[in-house]
Length: 111
Image (tube, one colour):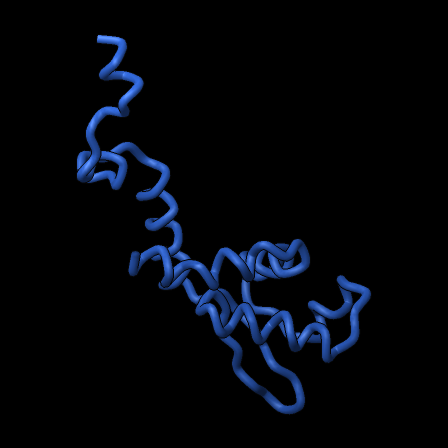
């Protein structure tokens, strides 16, 4: 369950449409918080909350310069998340559905 728990916070963070839109914006490169604020009708404290969650889950990195914070995607984290999503959506020999599972009783009765 380790991998599933590790990515739980990422998918919860992306479950909010505004945070997903922010990640989409950051896919084009680093942005100042003021540029992100221009695209949304929200207070600076609300944006800070969204950015805190995106940074805590590891998807986004922030760096301070003067009075503003500049945000960018953590490309290593994005690549790990992409691989995890690919892994759980692809058929594989060691899939959890194949471990320690026999056929259901209904199937056995029909034979």
